[in-house]
Length: 324
Image 1 (cartoon, rainbow, N blue to C red):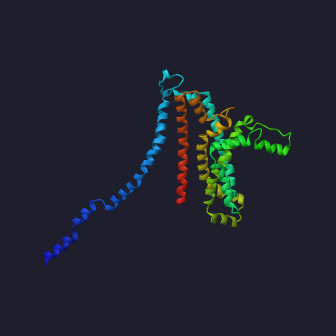
Image 2 (image 1 turned 30 degrees about the vertical axis):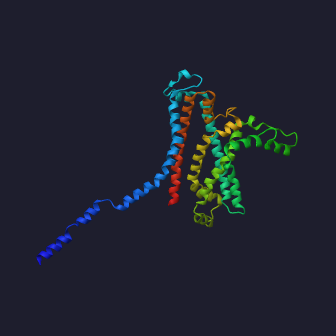
Image 3 (image 1 turned 120 degrees about the vertical axis):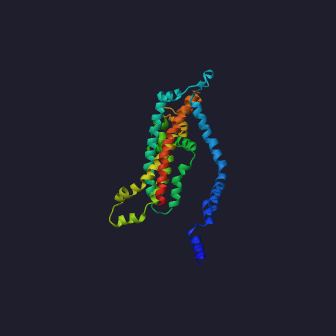
């Protein structure tokens, strides 16, 4: 009787060796999950390798050339230059002018596009007949190829002989109306106007998405409490759009800083409109100074990456709030 009791006590008190061995080995479901994860990632490897080869290898080559004294006009002087190319970029008068022009074009384009995009987004956020058609038409300028948009503005709008702007002046003021050379007399505003026309729809899209994510019940409650539309806009809409405004500003800055098509097509960098991309183009293809052009390109890319980091942080913050 006592032996059976001891046996039952040992059976209940002692650990089960089968359970111990089962707990020591990783569960098969986890191993299967890891295997499935790798099977899903392997088909993406060719695309990843292609992107690395097409983007990172040329940039690596640019970094290497930026440390070399490499000018096609002086092939015998090729060699390692250290940081002298970067020093020349920061001390060159033309480079400083290009940086100033880039900042001026970027700030003007982004601010004007942001204000116009917000105004259009507020109008398109209301329901009206033909809303879908109007939205599509407002997005259309952003879908135009930048070179085609620049050619359109240069020849169809700005041309002093047959351009639309001078044609409208003649239609309104008569045959004696002035026929200004828009690009020659005001090159920088002409560039900014063409860029604003193309980038305002981009700002409008982001801000319209922010407007449509507002909690409408809170807005309606504020209207019932007697709040005016201006009060709702300043106290509720703008704070809600803060991160969307930051994101559109950062993304617009990244794209406008890299703009080359409009400068090359409309003004060809003349009369003080050469920005950083056009300065790099002139240094590389005209001066044949590959080392200095590569150094300027590296500086531009690093500055753009800094802005892109803030843009990504803002985008992740928006996605996190939307997911709550």
